[in-house]
Length: 121
Figure 1 (cartoon, helix red, strand yellow):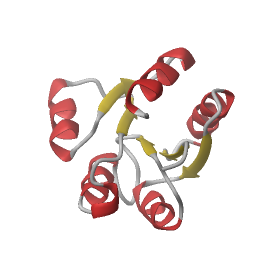
Figure 2 (cartoon, helix red, strand yellow):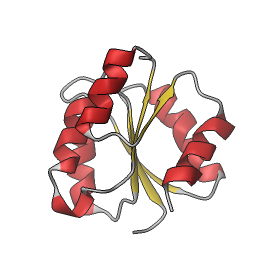
Figure 3 (tube, helix red, strand yellow):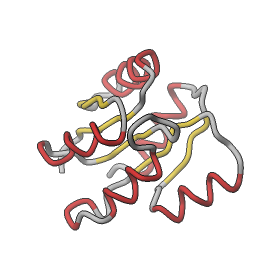
Figure 4 (tube, helix red, strand yellow):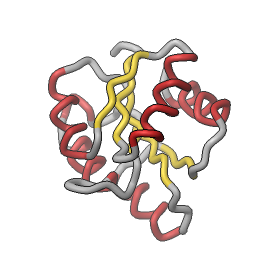
């Protein structure tokens, strides 16, 4: 797998900030606007990691994670939830779906890069 990260977030400004942060650290980024868009892009490219929002239209982050985990080629890909949600129940749902980690927005760029480096070998 390459150093390519797929991001899924319905907020254009958040996608821009995440992309800017990741590209600055040397990663290639593929942006998507929701879970369905992310799934369609996942099939076409050499993605090594996914960073997704939780609350999105069409397909939320939990549904996206479940769909990705059901695909044999991506069963073990690192998936980080980057969301405003911080409740334990939501975190539990994310973990059960197969999320690798959880970052609460707003995030600090060095925090995001630190998590990415930790889980994306």
